[in-house]
Length: 316
Image (cartoon, rainbow, N blue to C red):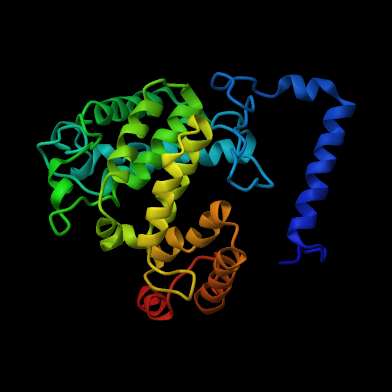
């Protein structure tokens, strides 16, 4: 989409980044003022590049907390800390620590805590709010303590809740939460925890990968498998990616679901698999599906994705 001056956004971003680099070069004090904190050095220092045979990517993500928000952005994030995101556990029955199945496997829970905790942690890492950080670590530590010998973690009920097999979906956003926590803190418990859990997944039969919400959202889990592979080099993780792709809803040959959350979390799955497969049909599928969805349902203020009938109901 062109900018207000007619320059494509990608070109505008490139020019902006080049200008910022030039300013830093002219004024070294600006570079010295940048936050230098971060996790212990890894394969690429602040960055973890793709490990072969995965295809390289053009951009690398800095760890949470490497960039310090200031000005208007810092104010907006503080509003989140003080508002619903930062205090949701004070009012939600799903987020009562003592009654939650993610820290007491005998109790029940599903997607509510994973969704919230994933965002809460990142909010704490970028703001440095001690209250948010303390609660995030408490939840993550409690979740780690539920891990069984075979790698399963969280509510025991979910182990057999889908046709007597595991419901992998709610664990996907929690893996993202653990990844951010590790990148921020360097917590040495995270990599072994994720390794055991993904080994549990890899040991499951093929049919469990094609059930319920998880089948539409394997892109989330593939992302975590790559993240772990790039740090450990464990080749079996790529076998797991093959299983997840084989069990995924078919985003390669069209759009298999019009549920907007499925689309938001799943449309990228073919492109992610392309990093391993190298098949251009996988790469093209994600771009085609994105264009289709945004052309049909992304044309309203704010740029979100909503089906017309849902938008009509919302307007009423």
